[in-house]
Length: 165
Image (cartoon, rainbow, N blue to C red; front, side, top):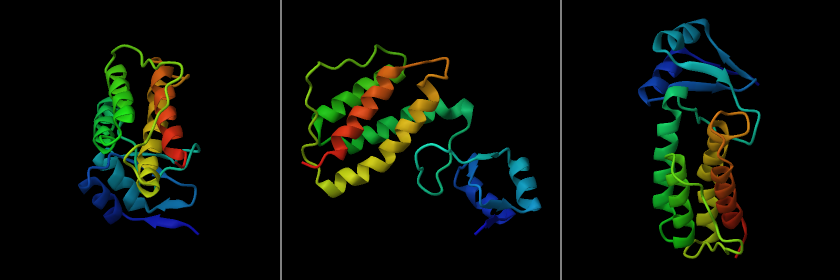
């Protein structure tokens, strides 16, 4: 069933700082909503066909994506503070994303999510999924700045949090 977005919806999104809107196949914009989005400079694009993105999530504008990605990594780092091994790995990812050295791990590193209940780990997986999709857009195989180390490290954190203890 289609979801209709009005000019008021666009204004509300803009007030919340949204600069782009991912439209699902069943989303419909009224003509006034489309005009309002254009006036505000809001990017309208089809929703990702990749992994599921939480409802209401919109990607930052391309010129702001790298800085926003770094900030999202730093915010996620705070959530991982109780698990030092994961937090240290994310520190290496942040340094690599700031054009630092490649993320390196010993061959037999055993990541542990100590301090997190299964419920907390599941709650950490949603924002991590967004970071992985985002990293793929910034550093994946079809980009100028390929950084497979960043993608791999985030996937390792996801693997660790996904395993029940």
